[in-house]
Image 1 (cartoon, one colour):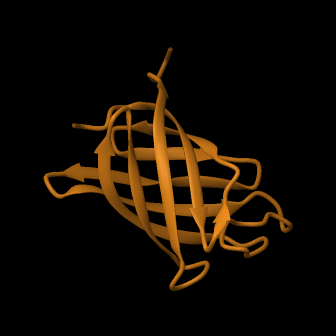
Image 2 (cartoon, rainbow, N blue to C red; image 1 turned 180 degrees about the horizontal axis):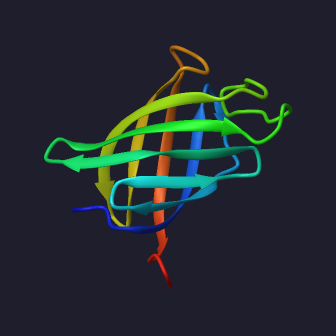
Length: 114
């Protein structure tokens, strides 16, 4: 099952902490999105091996608290996973807290432009 261009709601958890969730847009492998604390930008590639993603996560303020428990920083995450149902799941690691795993569930909510 292939992931499609569109808007996705994202729910995530890391280091035992649930995130508040956010929204991303996915268009031809480019990801843009955010939540009340952070902005996300990066790439998603899907091939026979599944989904791989790399995201730059940027704090909106110096007081932004990440799902990793860090405050006011920007970091990178690398993810891998698979398409499921009407979305995809990925997990991976971050430069924010080496050794901690982040899990993300993305659910398709609308096509781009409508």
